[in-house]
Image (cartoon, rainbow, N blue to C red; front, side, top):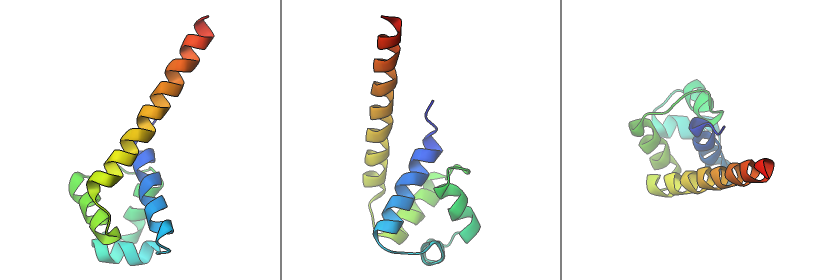
Length: 90
């Protein structure tokens, strides 16, 4: 089973690391605690829509872009699970 908060966290971390930025820089700019941002990136905390928007703003990436990437990854995972279920049943 896929955990949405983990996929969101992975995507935020990927964006941050792709920019060569630290947790400290992004947390400061997003006005969220470093610990909380770390927990969000590790999929340990669910982020509110407001927090996601603040993090995306700090990363200078559209929220819609992050959500689209997350949606694609979730859809790919679901398709893979469905394929495995069909193969196992055969």
